[in-house]
Length: 366
Image (tube, rainbow, N blue to C red; front, side, top):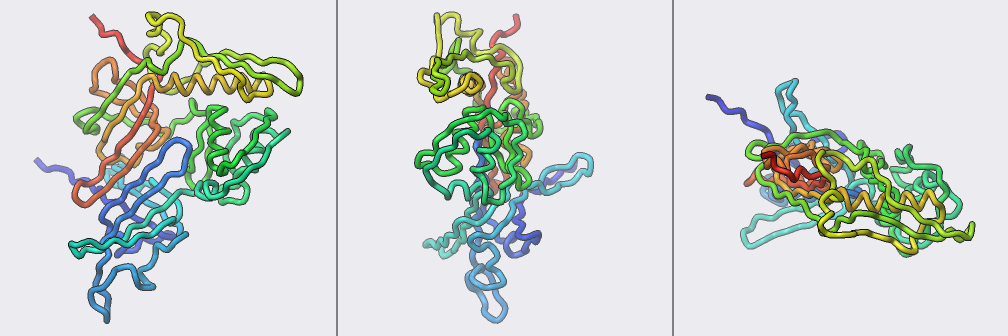
C-alpha cells in the first residue's frame, strides 16, 4: 500500500521572489502569534556556501545573497493540503519586516544566521508616550492611535460611536491600543496586511477538526472553576453628570462550543461574585461594556486546552478548533488564543496551540 508523502518545508518570500539559496539553507522556522497581535518569527539558516570565484565562505555576506536586511519586508508560507486540487499549496502564516539579525558560530564549526521579524504592528510598539483623548468617538480614537503607520486605515466598523475619555500614561501605542480594545472585548490582528479589529465573540478564522491520534499528537484540557464567578458587577462615577453608575454583566455570546457554563457548576460554592469598584467608565454605556468584557474574559476561560497538532497553517489565533477523541466531556469546539508553528529539518513541521471554551459537558451519560 502506497503512503502519501506530505511536503512540510516552509518557504520564505521576499518582495514576491523566493530565493533558492535562502530557502535551501533553512534549518528551523518558528512563528508565534497570540491575542492582541504582534506575531513574530525566528528563522535559522545554515551560513556556509560555495561562491563562484571565492570557494567556501559565509553564505549571506555578499551583496547578491544579503536579501534579508534589517527592515526588509518578507513573508513565511507553510504548505497545506488542498483537498480539491489534491496537492500542497502555500499558505501565509507570517508577514512583516526583519527586526534583528544574529550570527552564531559554535565549536562544531557550523555557523548559522538567525533572522527575527515582527508583523506590521511593530511600529506601534516602538512609539511610547503620554497623552489624553477626550471627546472622541471610539473609532476616531483608534484611527488616531495607528495614524502614520502602514495600517493607518484599520478595519473597525463594529466599534461604536460612543464618546470616550482615555489617558495614555507612559505606554507604547500598541499597549494602549490593546488596553482600549480589551475594555470593549475586542481583539486586533493583522490579516492580509490590514489591521482587523473585531468583537472577540464574533471572530472565526476558519474551523479545523483535530482528532487525538490522527491530526492531534498530544493534548491537555482542563475545566477549572477557580477564576469563575456567579455574577459580575461594576460601580463607577460620571463626573460630568455628577451621578453614580452601576452595571451588571449581561452576556449572550461567549464564542464557540456547547454544554453548560461555569455558573451552573458554582452552586456548591455559595455566593460567588466579582465586583469592580471605581471603574473607569464615564457613561452608562461604557460601564456596561466594561463589565461585560470583564465577565466574558473570565467565562471564556472556563475550559482551556493545550495541544500539539501535525503542522497546519490553518491553525491561527481566532480559528475554531473542533477537538475530538478526548472523551465526551472535553470533546468540543474551542477558540484558538495562541499558535506556534515550528519547522526543523530534524523533527519536521508541528503546530502547538492554546485554546479556550466557555462550555463543559460535565455529565457522563448513564
